[in-house]
Image (tube, helix red, strand yellow):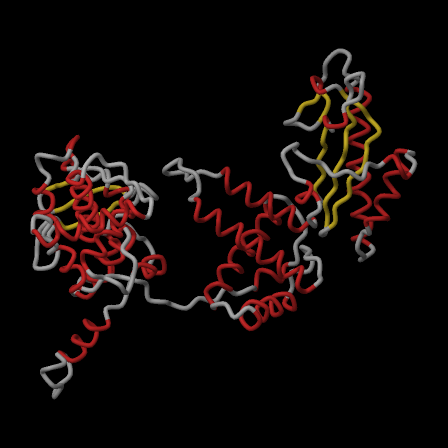
Length: 452
């Protein structure tokens, strides 16, 4: 049972007093009841949820009444549990009103709001009000290592899960409760997502993982009673190969010659098309625009040659180069990344860095490239790549995939990318089907040379 108190400042009367409301949550139920007491806002202790011991606050009269409500509610729940029955909401409401000697209309029906909530939020069931609070709690969290807030994509995922369960409840015509998180619910939700909506197993697994996290939050941090069956909910997942460039595609991007007449003519054509579509890239001249396209290409290659996120690649400098090794901490999680700094037939990081050695400011390997993904659309057209969309994130996935195909052990590649678990690392591993076929053929006796 969780008991909280709220000073209803939205119901402030003409004399400057506001009523004190008590909210009681237990076993998936919630009861709001007026304490019958009034308090001035300047006397209310928000942190302790009680009246401050100040002259004129009448704390010695009001606080005992509030404590009496809490004690009576807890005793009622204890009695019901001893009798092996559930405490009914109407029963507790009657007990407390009898204690306070309040008429039925004395308990306000208006739910507590922060002043920023919309009416639609107030109308949500208790389950979804809790889930909204859980999402808000995540929005306030910061990474203890980086002191950064939770990524927007993570918060968007939480909102998506809440919307999915709201749609499920509406389609099924049921009200979700903490007590109702049992095997029957799990099986029906699985049928709903996989069979009726036709969504992927991984999508279902993500919703279940977030649901388990939400229910654990209710149980541990909110001290609410939750059906323990939820702990047996399984979140299945299937490996799905991610997009990554092949060796041939990466070479094609590397070999774009921005000094050639053909590329310059193509750039002029693409520049004209971007203006006709209203895509003003705010560069003063064609030469400056073309130079930024080349920088975007090189910034992508930097990500593909190092496996760094774009945010880390923008900070990569010569100070991180230690001989033939780059040593840098990932900004997202502060994990150490150890990246080779030498050139081979496919990866040309040293060459790329020396290209900008006299032009990159503040000791960076490459200059900062703003709106890189917009300019990569131009690079993609220059390279003639159509099977996927070129983005900075694709560079990191390409590094992981091609290093594995070069024969570098998974654990060593993880030391370069800063991953600590293979499960998270696998989200960056793509499939080069041609390379896969060639490797199998090379190891298969009697395979025709044309394949290998």
